[in-house]
Image (cartoon, rainbow, N blue to C red; front, side, top):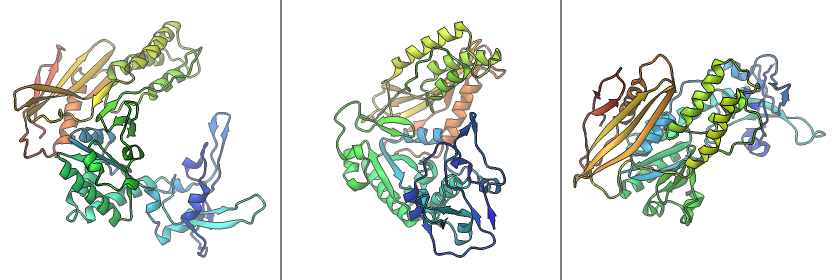
Length: 433
């Protein structure tokens, strides 16, 4: 019988949810030679260094497994393609997946309710948080469930494959009727695997009326009355009533001395998956690059000129808070008959930038545009149009399987890359729809 150290996730300031854990355990088992114990207690810091146990941990013996779900960027890009949005969350995803009998003895632990109480042996019967392979197992179970019932629920299976990021589903349809059908298929598909989808929300009230109020997002049960009521969707604030995203920035703590550690922390607090903050964040990244070039230590104050520029950047960052970006690329109630991707790129002595817009023409001949994604890089040896070509290629791969509404008969021509740099000429890329 071996005793294994805890998974790394249990090292740090984390609370252990004892009640929910015990509900997923059993006492009716007999010890075997291959049994192993997990330590279930909190470890603190020692001299600013994480406290680890000696020996071999369970995670040291397990493979993490590959990533089987779509990337965050792909899910967000596809979410903006749908005129009718539909989001949901897999309820207690890990607790819905049972461990096989042969694996449960590797997830044993000892627990007692009080310091004077008797020690009791438990073992996990459900997927364990913190075990390195748990994320892969959970996502693979969801994916395999979709593959098993793809013929019975084709719309739902496609949504699981393309529009789910771990336990968050961001999908939709071109019409209210298709969205309602997609909801029914998704709920039935996940029920086949023992899962429950909850926190449903949509930008269409008619779709919400076909969803059980107990399974809907709390804010969608009552109509949003004010402009400040938003729900977070994969880290981005979304107002389902007005169907737009809102840019937000974190509050920065006051600091008398600016250090490299603080500068890095400030940049990390600005979540920007699709590059909407790119023109602002690149300024901070350029300053951080200078700090690295001067070989300044983590807790060492940065030069005064960098501190002044950084404080100015901090004070001006609040100006972008509250700016809105439409969720859907296509204007509402407009018949789009033609659309293109246009990428723009340029470079300076400090940085490179690329941005992609979608250009649309409606049946009346009017032109509409929408920001899709942007990317910036600090100066390096790559050519100036590399970032824009990468964005175009990524959009091509991410959107090539998206089908357009037959009623709208949308057509797309070649994507166009524009660059003012003398190192690049205007180029065309293959059509992506």
